[in-house]
Length: 168
Length: 163
Image (cartoon, rainbow over all chains, first blue to last red; front, side):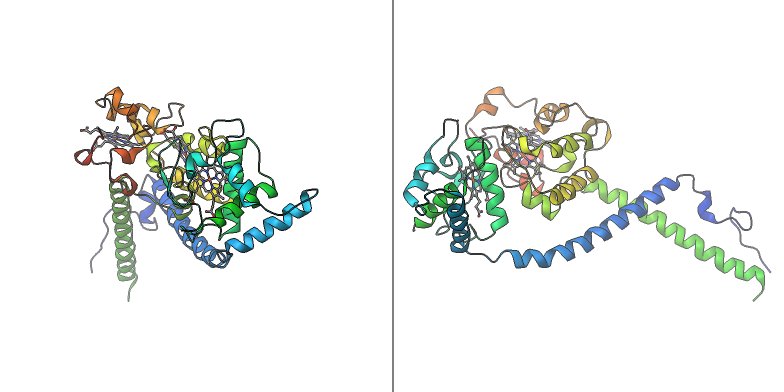
């Protein structure tokens, strides 16, 4: 008969001897966190795929509907007015062309950071105006930066009419 | 089986499990150190890389990321606001992978990586005229000199300053 004991009194769990139990707890937390992250990523993937289905024409249609409802004497969207809006500084430093260039079929360049921006016109970049939430997010941000306010549905519809009128 | 040999089996199982676990901990820490600038998250890549490259999270301390994420509507002179759900996910990712230690972990009050003492020390040999070169445009344009910046590669041997 032999006994095999390195340190511990009978009945004491070996783990109880490690002074830094925090390290163990933190690592468990990290494990749980990454597991939760994986689950979340999995559940987000599906709705994401469904959302990216709209076409530029559909987005234009819903902008037109909104513009008709909010503009007294609405006379339709205008590519020409859109182009003027796009290249005006509206009394501030930037215009839309500052980053998207006066020829939105070509790649643009961020006026402040210098980062290249893929072309904005759908004819040159099929990904543009296919995700309504993304379009709305960028109209909000960029109108704030250029005009200091959000754009009206008419203004957004005009800009889209202009961009859709550009062909390669 | 008598009690003593049961005890023996129990002890050896518990001990090997604990050793494996400790070994795992060490390995995990080693990996965390060698991760360099390559921590990544899809939402962060989608939301924080459209106006500039996605800056590695370990270049700012957690409190700076927290302040930056709280002010995205007025982000260095632009509106970079995002929905609350993405903001929460990105904020957690940035803080979990934020700068640690004496250098990159200490909060000097700035939200700019390029204004941290760490950045300025690493770049003290870059002449003032270089930062103003239109091909650099801004010190925050890491890729102008570090071709591999987007991949998290800032190796000093691969730096090329545009002229």
